[in-house]
Length: 588
Ligand SMILES: Cc1cc2nc3c(=O)[nH]c(=O)nc-3n(C[C@H](O)[C@H](O)[C@H](O)COP(=O)(O)OP(=O)(O)OC[C@H]3O[C@@H](n4cnc5c(N)ncnc54)[C@H](O)[C@@H]3O)c2cc1C
Image 1 (cartoon, rainbow, N blue to C red):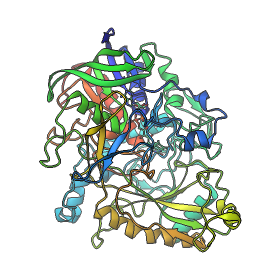
Image 2: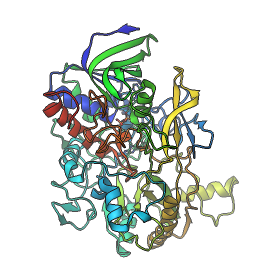
Image 3: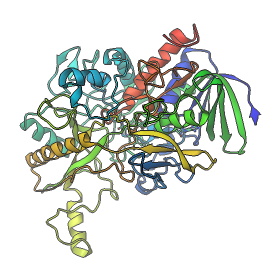
């Protein structure tokens, strides 16, 4: 194995969190920093005139190559896990920018009570109301701790939106359920597509409080505090699943790369597939020495020594690299002991109702995912659950994206023809007269939902794949039973003539896309007994190792976790610069 000269910092993964850390440390310190990214290089100009649904939407050109590395999945520890050989429930990215290049850009802050999920729920409803096998825990950090970093993350990305709670003052038209924000959004809300305006009017007429989605696809030209300028969204419709052709959507390559490139102390090494974190000492005490990786061009295994190691390789790979490297104690669901792999969580995300209207909706215009209208009246604990058979809730929303291939073919149930010329005629008629109200619900953490190394299946390097054991419980199923009729009521108020309500949750599906926002596995907390990293994202036992991203989130709160990941990463960067570098070691 070849050994390279040592650097100060090595960052595994060149996506949102890895490049943000590289930008922060690169511009604020003289440290030598290397980012190791398994995929290839990327730049914003790659996306100009490349709005190709077959290439990106169907053939997943920007995503992880499952022929090299997949994961296995099962519903419970007594089932056999099977490998997914095609992308399904989520679409992890590869290459510079990671999933952040083709993300949707929905950028909502988590509600304040999410960070105190266990104590607040017990306080209000009593411990007996919690599902028997839950593994909920408070995060060890509060919304107020994170608020300044939410503000910085919003300014970095230029988030467009309408404040609903400015320093405690509730503002009509914004999300009145959001936590108090110290500043307004950096840019005004986006234009709303026609379907969204119907949803907004209908939900208002039913007494709800709709608001425009906070979006990283921006409404107006914006220059961020780093001096990076981006133009306004053109509402072209090719958004989630694509890199933005004009740079209106904040992506790591548009927001972070231009700043990183100004700093000679940071380099990004592509085609560098990290295998292991080398460390000295025992699994539960020691020091990281650096990482080994396979260089894609030569096939050679290389050791990159470093003083500080950051894992930023997405939720699937952060716990996997710890497990492969023998760092920390693997979680054992039978005894509850160990921490690496625990609290795997996702979100419920379903089309609560498909609806057919009697007028064209112009749904080819819009910006999927980020831009649209949401309502939070039935989210979290924003409504009383005393007499309901479930806890917590979720968000209803509509958004604009009617891509020509993926969105074609839906017809109302009253149409009997399922093929042939009559079906074709009807499908063309309804292509632009159909839409959905999407429901995104919270997912509790359970003792039986976790990640470990698969004993059977391996990746192209011969290393065990990560195995996900995950299923819904009655709390999620009952939540959906309650929510679907609410969505139907809204669809009626929107003037839908026919609709197809969701049939209800059964088991977690690995093959249906449900958002690339899987979380947990290396969770943060206030104690090493039940978490892998402290609230500064520092490994409890290996103090020169930090873990970034969704794997550090103990709980499956709302759909858009990325803003919260970025806020946490900014807080960690502050901690490194202001505290750790002055006195390296475990942070109190
Ligand atoms: C289609 C889509 C829509 C989305 N929409 C939204 C949204 O609207 N709102 C929201 O909040 N979030 C959304 N997300 C999720 C968002 O993209 C992720 O939360 C975010 O990118 C995670 O950042 P990260 O740095 O943890 O991982 P990533 O951005 O995925 O970066 C991880 C990087 O690590 C690299 N890597 C992995 N393993 C290794 C290894 N062994 N060696 C070297 N490199 C490695 C990967 O190649 C990748 O580049 C969406 C994602 C997708 C795919």
